[in-house]
Length: 176
Length: 176
Image 1 (cartoon, each protein chain N blue to C red):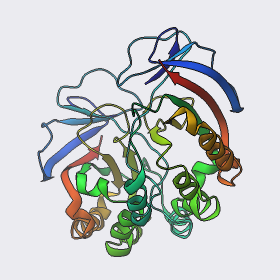
Image 2: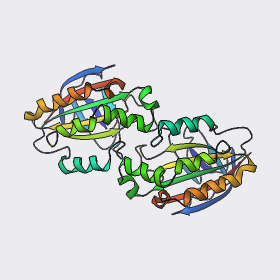
Image 3: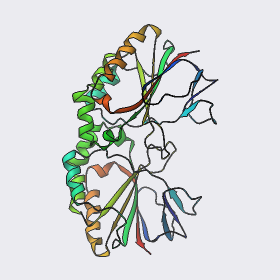
């Protein structure tokens, strides 16, 4: 659960609406395993699940270099909730994979930012309750790696896959 | 939400544990869009979601012949909750697809029972709460098509994919 309000482990540096409606403004971001009551600005839930697109070759390559989120030196981060369009979800698995990797090189682009940028993906589409986003992505990195992270976002937003994003909000944070 | 108890639209004819633990015994099965309080025997939730494995060619073929569940003449049915093993979920997308269709012909076997057997799949893995099953499958058919349905189950349980099933319960029902 990612909640915005007056408390939380992370200071919110800025909230930017990349596509669609923004999120309510908040000073701090609270990241917790479970819902802890209502939050003044926003509260978004997601679950870590199995991977949907990776091949074994790609997973082996990723696992060899990626770092878990939460490392001591990773004092900057970004919380980026995303909703894709109905057109995306109406595609079949082979069509989505084709756009995600063969055309948009999503996995390959992400690999270029490893191991500096750590990422954890949370799914919200199948929670059984109406949710404003399909995914909640959570990244962290050392302050000196922020330009690498900026490039990663720029590259992903220039892809064909990104044309299916109908709502995206970027919440940049600092730990402490 | 599929609930077992003394009430519900369907009479439970029999409950059979195919793998792992069975479900508590109940006289009736209640199928509803939302949770309606605690049920004496069991209450299982799932959500209809996007397809995970179909290619466009397969989806086009399926859509051309399949019927929605709930048809007037389809007075027999089966509610089959399934949990797959950790080993299944640790596979990557390409490995799961390979076992599901290229080796086990799951989609092709299902096609043979169309349009007589209607099916709706519900996912429970990403509900955000601990759930005893990964999927809830719901089938209905006319009484005279029961042997075709029996053959479908037999064929699916003989596949390599099925070796990853660690819990499966078969609840056969009649409408009325």
